[in-house]
Amino acid sequence: MKKVLLLLVSILCLMSCKDDQKQKTTDTENETESVQNNEDKDSKTNSVDPINSSSKLTDVDLAQDVENFITCKKASTERNDCRNSITKVISKAFELTEFSDPKLGYVVYDSIRPIAERSKNWLQLGTVTQETIDQALAHTNRGGLALIIDTAETYGHIVMIVPGDSKKSGSWDMKLPNVLSLTNYKPEKSFSNKSLSYAMKKSDDLKIFIRQ
Image: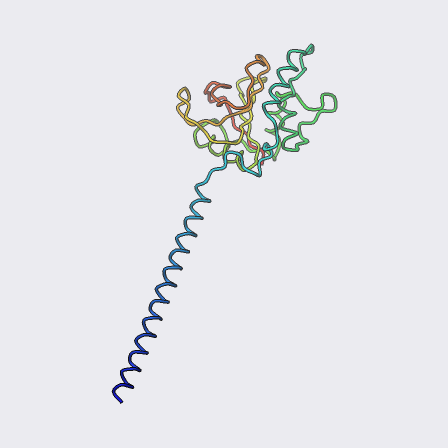
């Protein structure tokens, strides 16, 4: 009888140990899965894709657009020649129709500002500050269009923010994005992969416009 009781107690202890081990294994697996899920979430949150896959500029060769602009300016004979180049680039890249022109194909660059100011499709973020430039770059990295316009004069220079990361500028004392700059008065200084500080001097006259 004692042997039977001892056998039963041994069996019960063994089963209990297995249940405890199984529970510990399950708890460990759950903890591991939870940690992995949190790491995946953190990775997705912290990862920065310089050119968002949804960006309409992904398949656009901006360097070629710069070369085409410089070539156009060298061969130009009329005042309005090539002055719609930036308008053509953004209209094609973002499938816009608001800058179309029956004669020139696209309006000249200094027509962009009055059109954007009147349109409900555009939002003015205001002057260039770290906050507004970060907002504009985030909008660009999500696939949106953001322009910086020099409003000091009617024919103020216009640049387009390109997707990517911002970098510290010593002259501006803030982090700035790269831009596409087609410079009408000095076409050879045009570019698509340099900081905003190479295209414009810091000024309260510089305004940011984003296409909603």
